[in-house]
Amino acid sequence: MIPLAERLRPQSLEEIVGQDHLLGANGVLRLSLASGQLPSIILWGPPGVGKTTLARLLAQSVNASMLSISAVLSGVKEIREAVERAQLNRSMGRSTVVFVDEVHRFNKSQQDAFLPHVESGLFAFVGATTENPAFEVNGALLSRAQVLQLHSLSAEALVQILHRAEQAMGIGFEPAAAQRLIDACDGDGRRLLNLLGLFEGEASSMPTDPITEKTVLARLPESLRRFDQSGDVFYDQISALHKSVRGSDPDAALYWLARMLDGGADARYLARRLIRMASEEVGLADPRVLGLAIDAAQAYERLGSPEGELALAQAAVYIAAAPKSNAVYKAWNSARTFVKGRGSDAVPDHLRNAPTALAKSLGHGKAYRYSHDEPHGFSAGQRYFPDNIQNPPRFYEPLDRGLESKIAQRFQELRRLSP
Image (cartoon, rainbow, N blue to C red; front, top):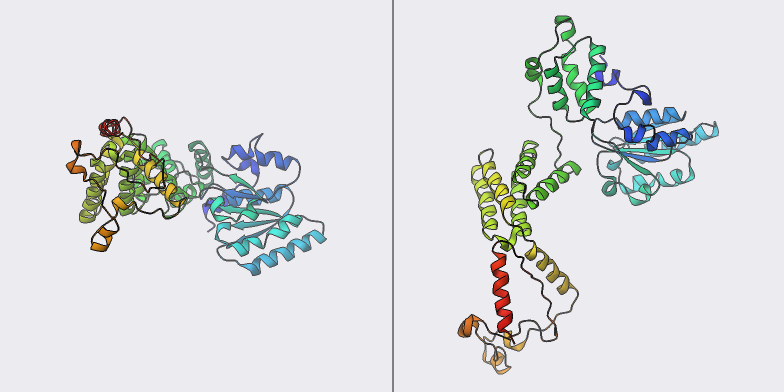
């Protein structure tokens, strides 16, 4: 039996739901098609939003022959065959669209094989990818193709798909049951149709009664939220977690932490990121935060999931609630940049180690002043930078937040004591 998703695949651009920013009256694709021309494009978006269907209908709309290549299963041989067929089409006066699904799977040389033919206009290139083209598609191909981003389907668009499926299957869903399906498919139209396909047999057993929420819940998988371990979704979510912590929003931090753990993210990776956040976002405004983050990571190592996840949640809330300072983070980056831009400046004699008689005879450590023996425990005026750095930079500038406000006061006093 043909899958429901294939049976309900749109047969015209007007049947596509969602993507109004591309196909609406002023959408970039609609305007391009009005001229009768299809430029080379890369369709970038999550699974189940209609990239393959859109490519087929775009070729149809300009009366072009569509040649499909799967980057997962194909190689240079298939590319060469597509070029030969496109040349044959041209000799017959027909235009060609070469569609490459999962284009990010092709390596650089395979992607380069398209360049001269896209440049010459032998065919319009249409690539589809779920990964960020800026990272996965080589620059030469990107410069010859317009990147168009497709969005996850909205709830309204998914409702339209659900109603079409109900008519095709001859069944109905209670409003609560329909909402469960919409929520479970996570903006993925194909996933929704695959879920609906689980209920096709209900038409004969319950021809009049709508399907209940209880029935839907009994058949839904436990988790269908979109997540991956290395792609854009992963890095977008860790970015959202980090920025929620930086923005002192513990509730949002808990939300993104739960989303990532629920999606299968490595809790140890999240623990390491929390340690990083403690140093980068709080630093010396509250030095206890770093220790708490390390303790949370160790607690997770001992307890594992799900018990150890509570310690990570505790750390996320505390880091989010703590006063924020990136002063140490900025100081460290500045120091690294400063060091990389200079040679190997010599250590001043008074700071050098003097473990031998020879070293002492050379004056190593001779003029060093031991700060604990000085007033206020501070050797006023003693220099610690190399001698040839006449105007030493100030990398660390404490902020007036948390403990750093007291550190700032201490520095002010020490500078007052220095000549």
